[in-house]
Image 1: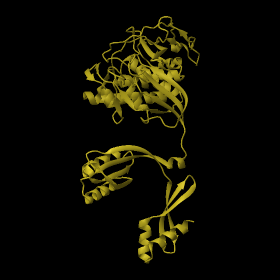
Image 2: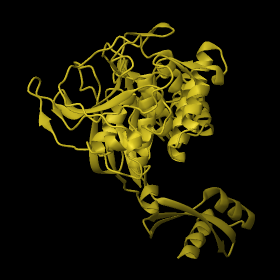
Image 3: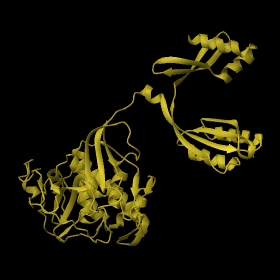
Image 4: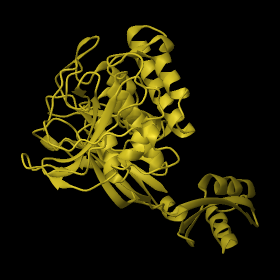
Length: 464
């Protein structure tokens, strides 16, 4: 399955995510052409500069708003109060009008040559200009309402895929902003995310995903920095209120960087597109792209790494022969035996895969027991809480283990004494274990008044 994995070790922003797609091969001219289908009143052009962050080379994507004479590609590593950091770099300017290139004509400036910049040594692949042909109206740089943005997208000639995904991203943001400020989503006025650069980032990202063939999107666990951000509604600690709300249900960890690393635009795009946030697994890499943020960080490169490849699906039999479990353990030296038994029953009832205890010698020569619980990762927290609640434990050790296991199948067989359930264990396609189910076999043995072992032997023989 074609998969795009975003490695967000330094957070993410809209411009960084778009830059990583361009580095993967999405042409800036293709993004520019699609943006030309929007009835934006603003005049702008795009930059895609090759640069470095801590010796990692990638693409810095920037939107230049000609109505304000500002570079807006600063979505990552800035305060939200529109105090812009500029990286003054030298590149050739080339402007074109998307609507002059109808019928699939090639852009005359769509070159991807690189040259060295004499001042700072950064390498540029190209800077593709965009001066929008719709010059009427007013520039709405600092805020648009939800209805205005929906109409802008819906009335455009963008593909259905780009429209649907972009609308879904803005809907997420509208719901969050409405919740924060106590208004209906359709009445929300976007400020930072309604600015020109954020609209272009969101549309460009959706276009880029389509140009890559609409791969399945996954992402790493997300990180955020610390400190404060100045936004349109006041000063808030990092992560911003909007970012937190957009990532509801998604794990987020703060790291020791005194800056905002994860912006609302980046959070909205990842929340909409990424199916899960987990370490990369089984991905056969085909190509890697890097999207650069504006700020130079001290502890890590300010980069989003996009990995395009194929997920190698394990066969059904192989997938069923291994899994990951959590082992919970605690030492007990002051709990009566009957309470240990009660805790064991409660743990089994709560979903434990196995519960067992063994005698140990503890400090001060006191005898005790080691209580061990095997759990699925989904049940581990619940079972650890149960141990702390129903035993005398003050702490629970937790380790993760890879478990090899047989593929299991329950089969009912006919014996001279009656029908008995048997558990079969397969390694691949090979049958390696046959185990009569105790309760089923004992019920037949009691009913027929025969030794349990005879029922066991008959059930095994019925399989062979």
